[in-house]
Amino acid sequence: MYAILDIETTGGKYNEEGITEIAIYQHNGFNVTDQFISLVNPERSIQPFVEKLTGINPKMLQNAPKFFEIAKRIIEITENCIIVAHNSDFDYRILRTEFKRLGYNFERYSLCTVSLSQKLLPNMESYKLGKLVRSLGIPISDRHRAQGDAIATVKLFEVLLEKDISKQILKSQIKELNNIQVPSKYLSIVEELPTVTGVYYIHNTIGDILYIGKSNNIQKRVRSHLTGTDSKSKKIQKKLHKVNFEITGSELIALLKEQHEIKKNQPQINKDGRYRLYPMGLRIDYETRYHQLVLEQVRSTREYLEVFKNGRVAKHIMKQWMETYQLCHKHSSFKDSDGACFAYKTNQCKGACLEDEDHQSYNQRLEKIRDKNKYPYNDFVMIGNGRRDGEYSFIYIENKCFKGYGFYDLNHQINSKEKILNRLVSMDNNSDCQALIIAHIKKNKFRKLIPLKGTEVNYN
Image (cartoon, rainbow, N blue to C red):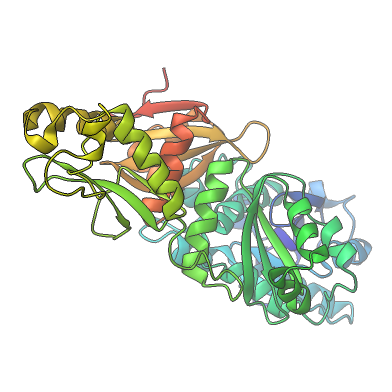
């Protein structure tokens, strides 16, 4: 859990400032679970420049509660949470100072969205809160007021969580809260999980990721691990300490995140997915006069029409293609002996094996297969479901290359390539990604496909 906050102060000498306003949003990594917003009577004067900046004046604070009156609520809403703030050193120091005046030692772990942004959002023009969130298309109102800045920090932190592919934020949370957040029963772990589409991360006591999975019902899938008797389930049950999750809303993004993050994080129990999700591929070999349909183990340097989880399925699809397009066994991985191929003898080959059919006509049929198994445009955005009502997801393809995914609420947030890149969670392009994306396109499992021309995105 996180306590995302912003504090306005009186200004003045170091460690002599008082709080004039505070806003705290408790957050579970997906959405806000509790909140506390209040003006505070600092019992000291406000610096004129601060009054001008924030608009908070002494008259507004006359009837506001003093800090000791809200201290208990602050302790409750931040208990077992990591403090998150934009320049957290300042906000955390101010809180500790106020509690110290009351004779209470307030201690929490903290994360700074400035340093996180510098790491996860490199090359931004500015890391000041206002400029940073505007560059990401995040609306901000009541600037330099606690509630407005805290809400903007919540939205920024959600972007950073999504950008954190290596899961350093989650790992540090588990390691730091280990002593105060030890689940005693599997049941309590399961009850905290949502029943929606996303990716889940199973951790051990020191925060290492043991297993990464994807499901359209996270709670149901994790429950199956905790009640299963297979070897994988037993390994999970033995070492499980905490389950984190990321809701995607989009099944495609869940699949893309799963395969990408397994490769990146190398979890102990995800042996099968550490290398390739789809290790077998079908491609066209253009180096021969009669182009050849080739089935082989996937190589990163080659482009494939389609990739498959195993050779049996790949061979079945290859046979279907060859029958449908009347392709020659001799000019394929089947490699029949000299003379007429088996397909010719059954009237399923037009005679390429005997050169009765010219190579141009034969190769055109192979190109029809290629056209059916490629991206519909060189550059496009594929819009899908978001994580909550009013939000949408997008997949970004540039020059036939998968670049990554992101989320947005309003069209203007991704109405240009620059804005798309600002919100983009980058991923490596590989044949697994292409297979997943093309499969979803073929099944029309998306809201909208938007071809890109130039730098602008046209939603009409």
